[in-house]
Image 1 (cartoon, rainbow over the protein chains, first blue to last red):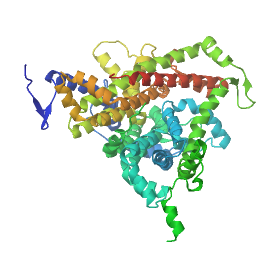
Image 2 (image 1 turned 90 degrees about the horizontal axis):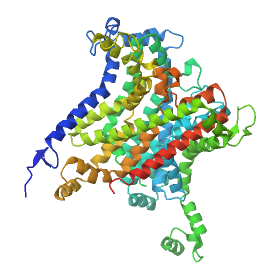
Image 3 (image 1 turned 135 degrees about the vertical axis):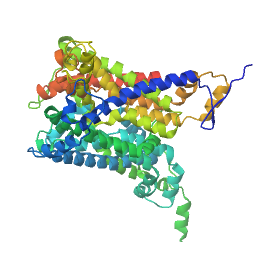
Image 4 (image 1 turned 180 degrees about the vertical axis):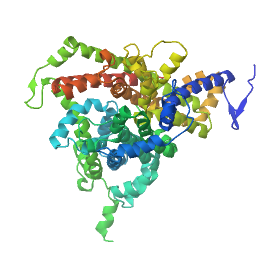
Length: 289
Length: 322
């Protein structure tokens, strides 16, 4: 019987890995990585290019003389228009924070209750939540519009904030994470010691599942921050940064790119800071059939 | 402590009032509900939101889809007329339907498979390298409107990057107006959609692969698994099944909603409606024509499409590795 030569990597025996396969995979990842990265790179350098370099044909994939002028333009020139750019930014921040905070409070309470309080009906409710992950907001758009009209919310911040409180992805992830990382025995012990459910939630479970609620926080924030302009908000003063950028882009490519860079850097930085926690939470995201 | 109190401590805590009475199912349910009342209180705020913004809209859309409704008058019952018109008399709907299906069956599976393959390939790299590559691949799906850069990249005049190079190399004589040319719109939109699509399923795959028990691979090697592809098929995929199910849901839901990308890059409507999707059709009837009954019928079609796609794929995936 032929014996295989063992390969060692990181002090570990590597099983079943051919060198040719390694090479092929590296090449595949490189090509794909370049495809993923080039557009973002192009956006960043466009934002850093002075006017002269932007109008070269063909445009270069690097900057000769990087300048911050586009960012300065964005925040000075665009600030002297009748609705200043900082106002759009303020709107986006207000909406994102309010929506995310509400989602965190409602979502974490519900995730705890569904996971650790064995009340009748919880399975049915969680099944509904799981199914709701399968549909997109397009489907609920019409009736949500009726609800907004009925509540008199057209052209207000509420339209972008409150529906987010009903979003289910963060809640789903959190419930799964509590299921897998907090034992029933511990909760039962706390109950016998006389702790109220609210206290168990706040003082025992929440500190234990920090990765999960950070994930809920970051994913919800990303969604709200990135969501496009609502078509039911028509006052210019209430519109978001996102919608302002598409207007600016038509006037000035430089300032528009600078705006896009500002816009995308916030969720990306949030993700980088919390990456380990988010991946940890995703570990228990599996669906059992 | 008094005698009575001591006795109460000993008695089972679940049903102190009903000792001695027979325990029927209904009574058991009632005592359970009484005992776990904080649970109901805690889910109530969310449940109200969920019912108002998700459950009611779905149910109401289904009801309204059988009516004609313009918000001013009371809905008028029309039976199946909306659906008949959709499928038999509305050519634009057929375009929208087939485009949506085209977007879904290309970007959905592609992004799902890509999310797994990339996560699988980077699984054995050192944690730092893995974290770096994760950011490169995940960043496009969280970078808001960054995909507008494709508009600059494929700009229709000589200042666009692609046109500039094609002209310089002499492949074309005049710039191609990529996002107005019916030949290029749909493929380009699919590429852009793919670029933004790795998303949540990618992250859950990375986490799931880390969680697979290493000793299984060693056992597999002893049992005669010869290469990484067999290892993936016989060990990794079956172990990952729950994560794959979740990832599929995320990918499918994304694959049905690329209307915004088309709007931003090609304008609304796109040239000759070549990239017209159900999302556009719905918006048109809702925000421009105010025919809410008809719009509801479109959203019901979309709802059943998404549900059917999800349930089918779930059924299919639950057989992986069996």
